[in-house]
Image (cartoon, rainbow over all chains, first blue to last red; front, side, top):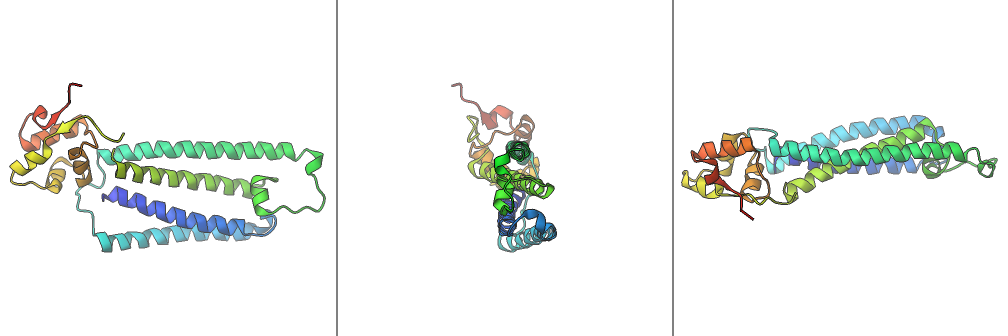
Length: 167
Length: 71
């Protein structure tokens, strides 16, 4: 396994682990997301720290188990080609995610004007506010973060696929 | 891209050159061992530059290393 493929496996594993942890924590927050801005910031910082720690730990484990890659070059033409193609794949996912967030914002702005949705005393849950209710900067930030993480996962999954299947 | 029609004699040439390893060939041409493995298995078509470097290591013309079937 080359150094680049190893890095892709680690990134895929760490991003999946940390992403699932972060968004399960976000979705478990009760009530309106705007009430939990401080908790969300803490979660975000923890996610960054956990990503760094898990990546370093995984590199160490890989190094112990598989040893140091013996290649003199860290990246050759095939690695660059695979990276370029995987990045292109990730771009499509990111662009789709951003488009969906934009549509979500426009949808929310339109729906908010409808009398039927202006229910007095209704406090929407986190999932409803993320995908079905009003949008706030925190909602948008988390939706964009989700799009970024899915795109990153797709980039690394693409790299692993091309390395394994052959390119 | 799951394969390439380009065939090669790299494995045979390696063994004829004092049983050169894939790692040694990779180091000589500035590639990774995984790339050499992929080239030998016809899973990856090298660039023109890399193909020339490989031929140069073996001291043979390019067409003695790589062949492209007519059809």
